[in-house]
Length: 333
Image (cartoon, rainbow, N blue to C red):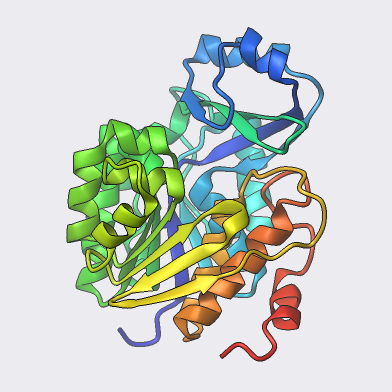
């Protein structure tokens, strides 16, 4: 590839996050399992939204959060995703473009409303999500700006896209396109329940398309249908170029070939909200990767970004992440 216009382009569900604190009793009253994401229909989403306490609204979605952070770090970033021409759609587009990322996917003029995710944060900082996918699941191959896909170093995809057939086909078309033009494909497994719904398809995807895989402990063990993290790490090794496996307070592992880099967690304050931790880890790693850093340095950058975002409410960093990385990576090549 010669002179790509973008460092990282993401494709994912374009979602507005609604974040609010909640008690464990509230989760029980809503039939929600703490720490997971459940898909909601329009009626369920409206009911949960009305029952929630006061919160904040910001553009979100897993891949969009990663792209926003990549752009904030100073890389050339773009995003492809579907919103409706409504108030939440305008919020999503404004917030994402304000980070410096390019977002040009035309808004739908009819059909389902812009997607929203109600994120309930319990006192232990765990987030439990109820998601109405709305317009986002109607993304299909004709929505792809193939010029962006062709001209990026890395195409970043979220596993949640696999929940809708049209989005799945857009996903596969984009992955084939970027590889045909010399770029690479990165995938986030998104959620253990998402992996469980599509385990065989994800296995085939990881082995056939993915160069860089991001997963937490629950997701990677779900992918390989095992209770052992060690077994899962052995199985994923060699199926993709790089596997980045996060383990919350235990840090992360970056696997490549027969080499394992053990990355420590970084702490920048009290744990407040884990929303976006994995997304920011991916952003830090991909930023470094697009700049030609070593895999170990990339892993540290990801861990730093994740360690900072969990000290605030919401998935979009409120501090200078690049400055934070530079201050904490002294001596790490």
